[in-house]
Image (cartoon, rainbow, N blue to C red; front, side, top):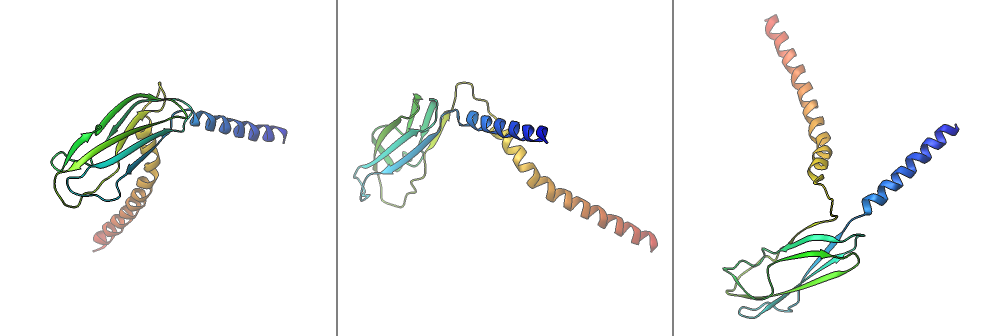
Length: 164
């Protein structure tokens, strides 16, 4: 009984330690705000991007790309559509203001900007591996159910053909 209690405590402490290690790294929260009350042709549109690092380490090689303002429809008056920052320290924020002017009237979809960064200096690309492992059961279980059903059906049809 004592060994079981010690084993459970060891598992709980290792899980708690794993959670602490998982939290170590940069976590960015990104906000994109259109500061204008009205959007009018040939008038400036002010867009403010704010990047908050709520993690425990610096975010490195931060890149913000916004494809919402195509050059054939908008003129960049101030700021840049694509910015690159070397690092954002933990617990700090960075703001960037972009001013664009629409060239023509119409409906436009101001979508989210794309932000990429490295959460630590020694980060590995494990996201795709984790994605593959997590999606395997969702794909394999229906496939196996279909395959067993198909095999049973084929055996049944072969048996009927041989009897005829």
